[in-house]
Structure formats: structure tokens, C-alpha cells
Image (cartoon, rainbow, N blue to C red; front, top):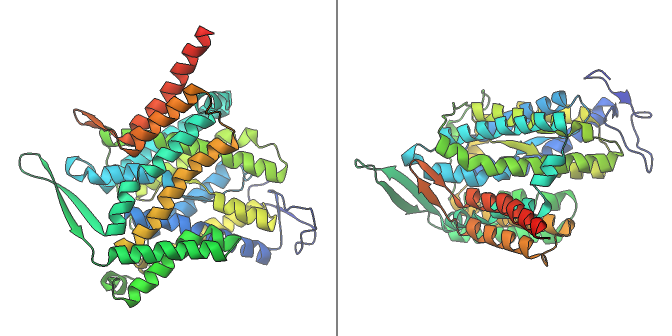
Length: 443
């Protein structure tokens, strides 16, 4: 079909019991726009949590998420419905880059790492398109993928604690090139953290379906509103911001010692994209294996573009799979609506400043839940794939990598610092392959 042409599904008004609106079909435009707005609502909470936590410009992140979604649809030939939102896998490396501000790190260097991640992912996609996905499945079995995802979540436990306690840490390089850490505490942060975390739990307990899927964002809203009425939200920048303007763009800098920190993210994005393609294929009954390489390339291109402009790296979104499952509408037309809608929303700096003013304590409640949930997703990968931990190699590799990652075992060589996430990834990927090769040779 032509890129922007869809067949009408039935009368365009109804979806019969047991039927689905396929990727190359659409409902009437008013109904398609309605489904597209649902996709915006579904991605909104998670997409905005990343810039709120990392202090990237929120409207810039939203802008590149919309542009990235449109690029994804174009590169996959309009055959694979997906929204590209902010990836949580970038949180750890961005935090590490921020703490290295006195030694060449900071936001610009983190953006360079995002660009690097996108380029590597696009290259992986090209290779997959050329030779197939088998080598990826060999390199990243479920025990390895689950371990890496778990490490990325739990490695951030210290950052969650700092947020919860309202602790700001600033690294400054003095005249003799020593990095000095200064700490300040936001009053009342712990109280707001508890309120936010309890709100998230109650929303999860009392709601179901779509509301439960955005419970973390709704908990943030509750904490934010309470903080506002308590006078803990600084509104100076909100009042000064314009209602409409282009997003602010930031140019990345490239420092190899920082870029290395982002390598584990590539492995997570591969797993997320492959999982997304398989999930959509199962729901639509279509064979989408031919789009695996295109999906990886598309996410790589979108992430690269976001990094060059100041936005967060992207990934395919499970939240939007939930919308498709609920509506039985898999039309890519709805995602064109969502992508364009996100771009329009990104043109309000005042909206971005509202998010940027989120108090540290509220972020503490959110990050405590969010980072822990990312870690538990790793365990979910193990469970769903029935990883055998009676196998001593699986047990040793996962256990060692988890301790290395969570405790943040690090070592430095010259300008290069290998953090816990990087070292845990190396242990998981290389350790698994080497030990299994030795075991096979012994047999």
C-alpha cells in the first residue's frame, strides 16, 4: 500500500466481535484520531518521567519522541504499529554522565552517549536485516537479557534514595583536578516521597486497565499537587515561560569514556524491539519477522536524532501495546495521529517548565517505584522464558553480574571509568558464552 493510504475497516465505525483493525486498515478519521489520542495518553506518563528525572528539557524529549515515531513508521513501511517513547534504560548511564560533570561529563556528554547508542543500534538493525536475528538470540539468551535489565533498574537504587531524601550532589573539579562533591538537602523531601509512593500504591490497588498502567505518572501528579499546595513547588520559571515556542535544542559532545557507559543500553533496546515485534505479530496474526531489522534501524535512527537535538533516547512502548489490545485497533494511522499530536504538544515551554519544577521528594517516590519495577522486569524475563537456575552456570553468571551491578563495582583506566552496569553486562554476556563453551567442550 501507499505509505499514507489505509483501507477502510468495514463501515469505519465498528469492530465486530473477534475482528481486529489490521495495520493497513483504519476506522473513520474521527475514530482514528480518538484512538491516536489514547496512544498519546498511554505514552505520556512514561515518556515524561525520563526528562523529569534526568532534567533534560521535557518538551524537547516529547518533540523527538513524536518525530521518532513518524520515522519508525516510515522506515518500517507502515507495517509495524509502534510509539517510540523515552527509554528507561538510559537513566543509569545518564546519571553516571551527570556525576562525571567535572571530568568531561554532563548533559552534552550524555547526549553524545545517546547518539552513540543510536548509531550502534541502527548498525545492529542493518546486520539483522542482512543476516537474520539468530545471532542476537545466541548472544542474548533470556538469562543474560533478564540480568542486564535487572541490573539497570537496581543499579539506580542509590539515585532513588538521594531523590527520596532530597539530596542534591554536585561534583566540581578544583584547581588541582580533584573532584569535590557538595551535598544539599531539599526540606520536606522525605515526606513528599512517602506521599507519592503511597499514592502510587493506592492507585494501583483501586484501579485496573489503563489507569493502573499509568499509576506511576498519576502518583507523580498527586505528589506534585500536594507539594504545590504546601508551597514546595518553585513557580518562578513556570510564570516566566512562554505558552508557545520551539523546543530548546542542545548540541552533544563526544567523549569516548562517557560513550562506553551507554553500551549496555544497546542490548536492552535490542531485546525491547524484538519483544515488541513478536508481541504485535502474535496479536495481529501477521508474520513480522521481516521487519525485525527495520524496527531496530528505525529506533536507532530516532535515538540518534534525539541525541543530536537534546532529547532522551527512544524505544518501542509496551504501554501502547495495551491500547491496541484493549481497542483491537492495530492501524498505523492511529500512530501517525499520536506522533503528530506529540509534536504539537511539545511546542509549549510553559508545559515543560511545569514538569521541570517537580520537587525532589516527589521524584523520590516515583523513582523508588520505577527503578524497582525496571529491575523486576528482568525477573519477569527469567520467569516467562523458564530460565533454569538449577544450571550452575546460569546461577553463577546472573548472581555475580547482579552483585557487580547493584553494588556498582567500578574501575578506572586513565580517562575511562567502567561502571557497575558496564562491568555487569560484560560478565553476563562474556561469562555466559565462555563458561557454556567450556562446559560443551568438557562434555
